[in-house]
Length: 456
Image (cartoon, rainbow, N blue to C red):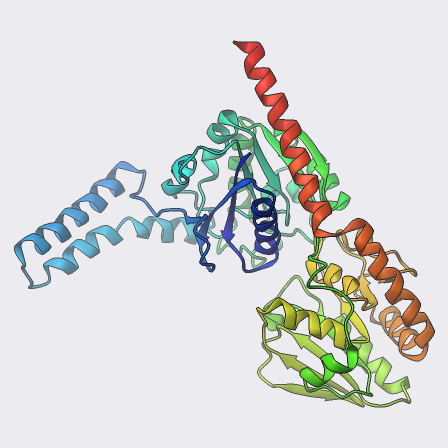
């Protein structure tokens, strides 16, 4: 089967990690797998960059082409005196339309390179699998044409497809009936002015002409879609949990991991993983910090170390009583990330919004008991009281109680650790995810071909 996945990145970030793991898994099974991305970080020859082509609007296209000709004429005649710069300026004028569109708060879809998606690989794909399309690189208006040409799958990593701009709506339900009067303009992808109703309506019109096959990592996000503007476009849908690479994320030698990471072999170590911690509106570090203030006041044992991995705090560490919070930089090496989990006694995850965070699965796979706030799909990842604990959102008192319980009861930690590893093997292994998608593709492609044959 010829599979083409589309995402902003190929191998960096949560959505990219899932797409990349699928891509590598497909190739290892002999499938013809490719990726189309805006930013390529890998050296994989089967990953292609979606080209930035000339604008589609006639006046912009004319200016762009004039700029190209000016540059070529200057190169051909070897002239200087700013001739080359004139060509560049003419080519850049159309980009000001992008700036103006963003200024008005409208989502920018004028990226014509995405219309050549089916020509980006040597052979036309059998299916196209879309992931995150925000970040200004994809023309969503291509979706009806694309989805009527061949089966199109979408994996939901957030709520952007359903809203007037935001990746998560928090407590706002305006996405159900039109957006507008947006209370969260700063929520990524942020907009300057409130054009959320315009954006929502335009997406609704696009979906009305589309035929889509949807995959959800959690039941939580699947239920959202049933109430959304996307519902009429859904041909079929199923939950396929994200999977974690169990060859990388597995229990390890705690003493060795701590030695390698220069951590105390005796004191409790707690971990929290989040990118861009100081400005990450989806994560809730204040709940973790407040919980640790309570723990520090009641814990009579040795010093506690909390590692905020991926944090970008200006200070390298802060102290709360006998607790030291260490801000460690982002780590790209999967094996080293696994060592952080293996070195830790507990993993904390507090969030205002989350769909199905990979980090929770990674911690569980390494046998690190998790205490997490029950938002989004997180309650589907943790068996409360068996593999970890789910506490109410923003309830730092409840989180502190569970932290103290697991720090004091080594037997309970061991029990949860063993159960977590076994549960991940059963439900969240990489093979389960790959098999789930390949089965889904095959079923849809078979039905698609049968319908085409029947209509001929």
